[in-house]
Amino acid sequence: MKNNLQNSNTLEDKKIDWNAVQSAMKKKLGQDIFDSWLKKMELIQEFNNYVMISVSTRFIRDWITSRYLDQILQIIKEFKKSIIRIEFVIEDKNQKSKSFDHKLEEKNKNFIKDNVSFIKESFLQYNRIDPNKNFNNFVTGPTNKIAFEASKKVSEEISYYNPLYLYGGVGMGKTHLLNSIGLSLKEQNKVMFISAERFMYQFVKSIKSNEMVKFKEYFRNTDVLLVDDIQFMNGKEAMQEEFFHTYNALIEKGSQIIISADRPPNKLTRIQERIKSRFSGGLVVDIQKPDYELRYKIIKSKTEELTLLNSNQINISKEIQEFISSEIKTSIRELVGALNRIISFSRIYNKVPNLSETRVILKDLLNLSENKVTIDLIQTTVCKFFKISKNEMLSPRRSRYLVRPRQTAIYLSKMLTSKSLPEIGRAFSNRDHTTVIHSVKTIDKLRKEDNELNINIDNLKNKLLYNQENEI
Image (cartoon, rainbow, N blue to C red; front, side, top):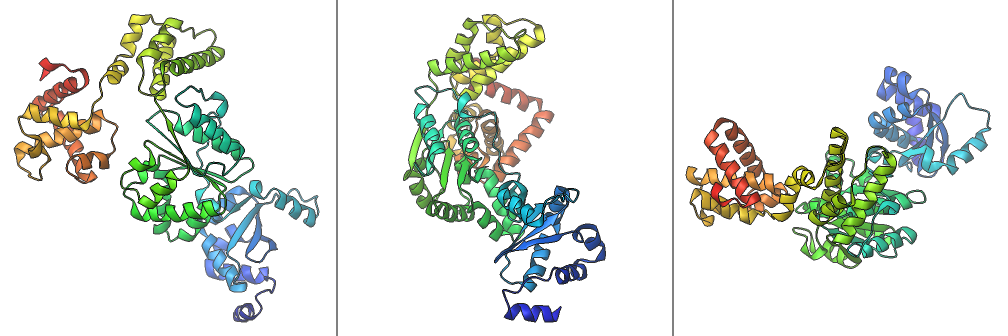
């Protein structure tokens, strides 16, 4: 073993002695592990900085990469220092009719399909591309036409707009467009479609497991990077630093970057200025709320699609389609959700609802679209109910007569708005998100024990949602 190590220091180009490598693996990892998992690994080919090793099944490959890969790599590096990664080939031992040279040629041709690098293995499940969300079933109108055309252009010619930054409210079709781009490019390119939250999770995980080199190499080795909901990167300085360098590396190598968010770059909060500046330097496109014509086109398209699938069950009248299109204005997602409710009613009761029944089925959606509940409105309403000032509620004081109204307002903000925990905390004088969680749990618990508080919160909800003045 020592002789091998000495030789590898002086003769870097010497071929790897696979028998010696196997002996070293047996000694370092133990006889049981070697016999169970490593014994049947075969060295297919070695290159300047990586080796190709064959295993018989995907399961064995997955088991080895998740448990022993780093140790195996270190052992191989003792015999050839320039090796920095391992590529695994799934080779069926029952099919050996081809010659070795021909098999190697085939493996190289199908490298992307049949080989998994030690870097990619950790991130294999992160792509969320959905084959059902494509350009063909994306309904366009005046409010999303530019975003659609820009997305199509990017999918036809990489780096034409770089980065492409799509923004709009919840349920406006941003994720659908990102998915469509990824779907159209993934056959010819390495595509990574990931949410900002998932990027953050993998970043933290890589730091904890001391795998940042793998993280960097994998994300910087893609042709197309699609990041959904970039606003959730706010306040994460270390992650923003890594994203900034990843962004620059991809732009320099000509990769395409597509970003989605709920607001324009200059409105992103707690995001580094240099990142916002780079976002603004590409094509920034707003996806606006759908107008009536687009909403009707979407409802009509979805209804026709469902009719083809369930011709004997679905027959929603034009009147109902027009009613849904005119009343549900907040987002496309809620629009489709309303249609799904009508369809569910039709299947359960074996009848299509009339207009009055439709109003009842969609009551909460109709009310929600008419009432915009904000944290500021909640704070004002709760302060009025408990007869305290807004300054007192937002102060750091922890007197009992202030704590309960403050917790109630935080609880209602969580229940009635779509704001995140950190956003709610900032609206209450920059309180930590853990304070928000504590307040919500406290009120949840008290509602089960204190009937008076429970009634008061229901009354406050009625006031906020339905403007029922007499309830307060």
